[in-house]
Length: 279
Image 1 (cartoon, rainbow, N blue to C red):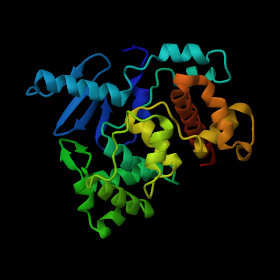
Image 2 (image 1 turned 120 degrees about the vertical axis):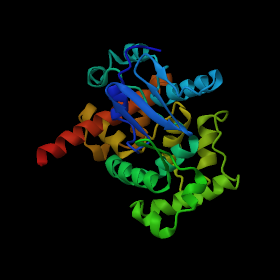
Image 3 (image 1 turned 135 degrees about the vertical axis):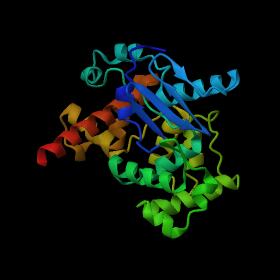
Image 4 (image 1 turned 90 degrees about the vertical axis):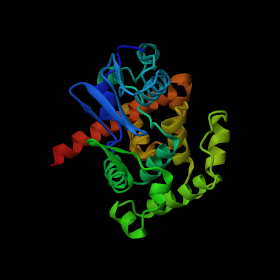
């Protein structure tokens, strides 16, 4: 684990869904039926956890927070490029991920065609409606919890048409038709498989693979990605196409998903500053 990782920056880019908190330097996450924590050096588990449970929980948090990311190596790869300034902007940032593949799927679908801020609100609404409260946090709802919600309740989440996709994919998942254990497939095979299901296009497939499985992929068609590239290279956002994004990012090989995430975060940050200026 590299000590350069900044938990404050990582949690700032996480989906604020009510299942975790970062307070007084400690990250706490409701997983399963327990709350586990990490303060940058030490992990915290319930007293009743066995050695095996502690090992599994630690591995889960390492995945969620990207604690095994070699950021120094990544920075050395981009320090002489147009992206060098991103090191100063986001020093210590890793790619946060979902602790569960089903959760990753739901949160990916919720982000379709809306801003990140709006998506977070709808996800948080869903978690509060269908999730179980544990102390001051919530456990992300399981598939059956979500299917048990009535149409009326689902409308309260403000998910809109995305609620229908989530219900459909949840049913497919529960019936065993949709397999989310795609670690052994390469990027193209996994995307081809996922996009056969209604509600999952290429953007969603790529985001799910990165967010839920930690694969080295990125949603090149994302508006924020194209806009971020445009800002960095001094182009008109309308001129930047998906193929342009891939041509720029692909040469970075094993670091392409992390670089893409930094670009996306840069776009979010600059757009937020722009909105504050207007207000």
